[in-house]
Image 1 (tube, rainbow, N blue to C red):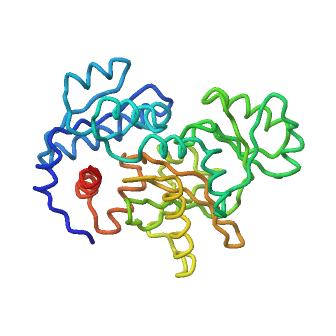
Image 2: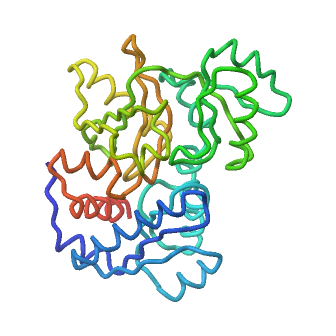
Image 3: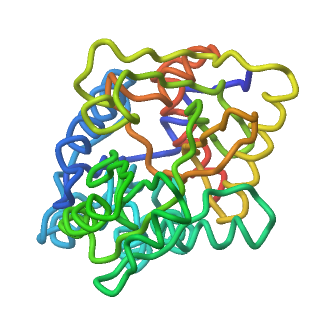
Length: 312
């Protein structure tokens, strides 16, 4: 357990602005995450403001004059390097990963290509387009997961088992992003691992009666089973941790992130994606895993602030 000097961290961070909302499809979740973080920082005694990001963001930030931005924007515009680039241009320090790491992690194809190049186990995939031979994809994958290349919260994702469904879901996923991919569906257990710099949080396993852990399972279902820490053998735990750590470092991530992984029935782990700004709602996995590790929500946020201070 790392020592947290609350008074020193709060004194050093100055005026913090929590960025939330935005205009992505994940806006509502971002509003919840941002408000939860804002209220917790307020309770800790941090000099904190909150900003619902819109097209007046530059003027809003100039008026607020923050010393540090804590980013709670999910999805395109907030998690893809865009807001990070703006903050760098305005010379406002911010939490989490930088421009390049954020952009790479948001793009599921780019991140998978890097992981595969480095020999990390990641699910096989193909890009989809109007010219795709739908039956060939089904023949290759048997069962495929269709998803927007850029996005989160499982929006626009579906499992398909035939060519007609694949084409239909491609068109549907196109409503969330201009680029759509299909990856081989891994049948087995689903895990997520929170990473805070050099600290790995206990892994979380998600179990649902749905086909997969979709948006409703994440934010609406009451019968979803969330197990933390996940029940793994020592060998499996080491392998999962090494994979999560390698995924994080290979993209150049910083601060808080979350790595999503599948394990097939043969015991092999496969990287799905990496989220550089994981959710902080009362349904979110990172606060749950941190609590299991003896880190309450307030201390988790203080660690996030401290890491940014150490980087500057």
